Image 1 (tube, rainbow, N blue to C red):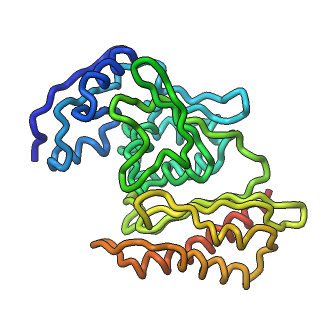
Image 2: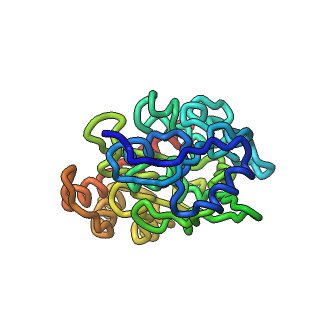
Length: 291
């Protein structure tokens, strides 16, 4: 199929881009990698009157360390560049491990960090990581910029806190705590597909291998990345043993309220969600012991 008629702009500067967004508002869509937008337009599931191509903007593809020891990644940084970055591998091993899970390498060659995060597909890896790690989004508009934490950024199914005249310019990952135990896992119909169910986990351990703090985010099971609070609360202060793992599995499955679709039933997602969370914790602890 072909997209509906639209007006195309290719601004050369950020100010020009923000001016166009201010002028066209809800009628405009940003084109970065195009890996999500173009299929939706070709199927006429999205019919923007205006497409603003930001690929000519300079300075939005950076991958840099912050003064606090975290990462600042520009909205136009390609997935493949992040995947291959030595700085990312050094500063955030969880993010580095997640990048190869995103689509196929052809998609990662064009797909952008800002585009994937702003698209907010609930089955995607990057939104889940943003919530898990406590990222911050820089949103620019004509006349100013504001910063939105990931916890407030995702509102619902493909809905975010981005206002019509705003553009994501950068996402900031906080400094990585050395010694953290972490894992990311997902179940897909085929390698590179969106997750039917996925989990991202990070835990802080004391010297006795007891869990001091933990965060667990499920994806593919709700309209947005979902923290599983009861499971997290249960794990804090625990030394993990088979009984704790069984209880984690049960609590995650109990807390999830996924929907059914053509790909998987709600019952399947609940059961698999619990199993994945248990496996993720086991994997994270095993990785921590090897260091």
